[in-house]
Length: 203
Image (cartoon, rainbow, N blue to C red; front, side, top):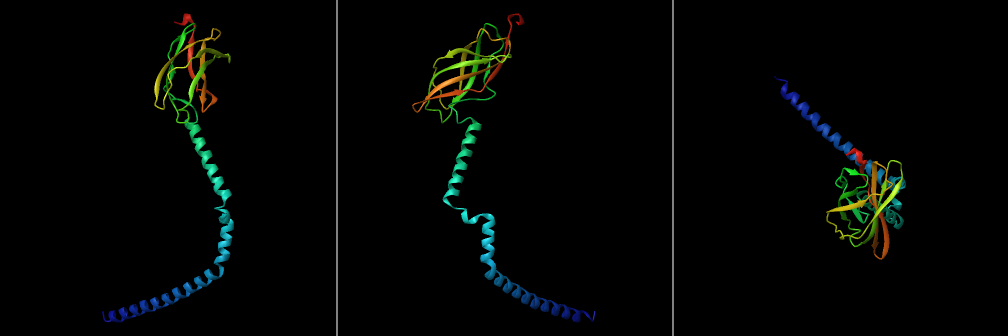
């Protein structure tokens, strides 16, 4: 117990010496850092700038390239979403009523809307195109103008006369449509719908 005051005194002395030494080392290191920074920072910045291309980062050409890239990205997003079209048929909701037999009229139920890009376009005419399992592509009846759609989703029922030469089996149907947009004629092909055409004896 008698050595405790001496031990505490020594410990306090060591702490004090450590703080003094630490402060001196910190001061020395700070001075070295300042010297190094002032002497080599321009060279270091130049090297980093070359590696990262910072010198040309804000040039007119680079800004233009970034803007072009953003415009292309926007166009790609619109294309993927179908917003670059005049008419958008909602996937998974539109269908052809079945069963459909040879000699029948096919009935298509469509959930569709105009896109913002096609809102002001005027529908002129269209035609349904059918492809059977032989690979033959046959045109059906013309699709006369109907009510003009808006950008709100609408349910529309369209009757299709089937080509006489269409063979029974799996049928892929799409519509080829014609619009007038800002004074220019524009053609558009819809996404396909699939149904099965049955022989009469299959009833």
